[in-house]
Image (cartoon, rainbow, N blue to C red):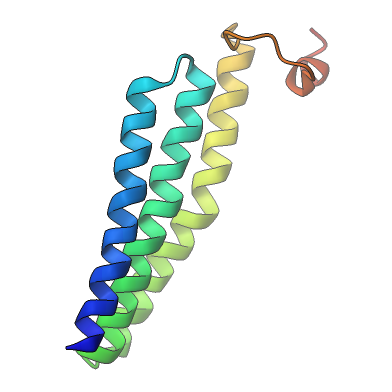
Length: 114
């Protein structure tokens, strides 16, 4: 019973981050801000669900194989999501999309000789 409550808390944490990120995608003014909100969904939202799933599979179901599979999926998401978001942001910048507000430091412009 206590394990189920702990798992549900982690699932709720993942749900809160997913909801906040979804609201951020709808409210943010430009492409780069929306990408940040999307990264929040995929990284922090999935992290809560993965922790809850690993706990439930390992302790509740006594299935180490399922827990390892969930952990590997979570690890892959945690590694690939920031890289993918960075590549999308660089592609958008290279394609001519600029933030609505003036940036104090334009590191991408330096990289592209703009």
